[in-house]
Length: 443
Image 1 (cartoon, rainbow, N blue to C red):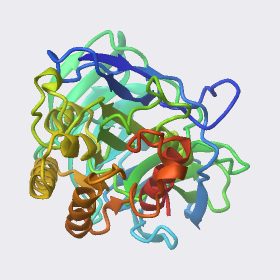
Image 2: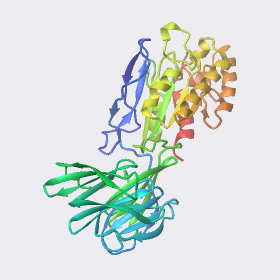
Image 3: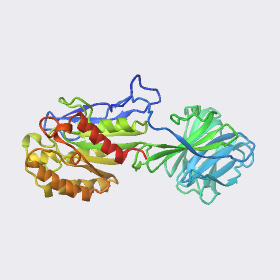
Image 4: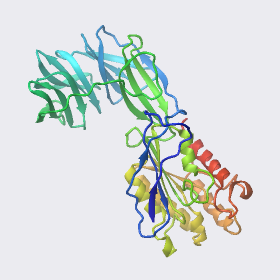
């Protein structure tokens, strides 16, 4: 088997926009039975999304007269920093349509930079040229710890790399330096590393909230994913409705690893391949990606001619089966997996019980990685094989209730299949993509 990486084809024309996100697709074409695990990833520039639109769902005025300097997210709460007193405001955003100010805290000196992780806010302030890191519990709304960082001057930047590591970069006496701090015990943060000759903190610039124009300069933006949406907290220089909450609906499944990308793995046989040699149109998974058409959506496509959901019985097709496809997909960290097999299993005389049992076995593997699996009904629609297709589809519909879409019921041989009776034609691929979009597209 050889691996031929291809770009995800998008339903847009013209040149790709600079703001478009790189998309990942892995298409596996049959050639050799010796290799079965995918290890390459090719990304290509994607066209800018036009289908999804960010919507402002909440807004809030932040008290105080000083200039805002930044914001940080800590769980469902957002910390907004500003010059002046008080200089740190905590906002509850569990209901993004109705954000609420919880209160404020004083940070000793002049607040310079903010970062957040889990329930903690890390605030860097300076007084008399000496910088300090303050650790704030956003849930209890209290400062729990602080540590002196030494003589550091702006610009200052703080990064919460992990739940136990924070980096602070600033201008020291002999150039820019970075301090690495251990914050595993928030009550006793400590410096564990001091790095000289660090690069100067890059200017913040305009934070990227694709396709969102509030009509006034954006100072800072942080995001999280909730359900099938990306939610931004946007801090503006405008004093009216200074904090905006902006939602972009991407898909009808969750971003389980929290990387901000809603990633779908399409696994299957030749009916899942994007533009195999005989096809006159894109495959259903490529059409689905075009229908969602969002910079925060990615597809990983792993499909082969002759692939089966059960163990292969044809020596020449060894390795072309769902078990290896799933193992190949897992390193890409998909949020959901769609399996579309069965046709070649029927041709290899595998019965209904074996087909359904294989789907359930692979579902258990996916669930062990925290991934939800969907299933597609089995073709073909020719001759005596219909009985096995009908029986296995009946059981799969029950086993994958709410996670199953059709390429059998509602399809006709003349309209949706090629002359061989088991390869979807352009109309069949579009219909399968519509079924997928109805289940997986944004709500």
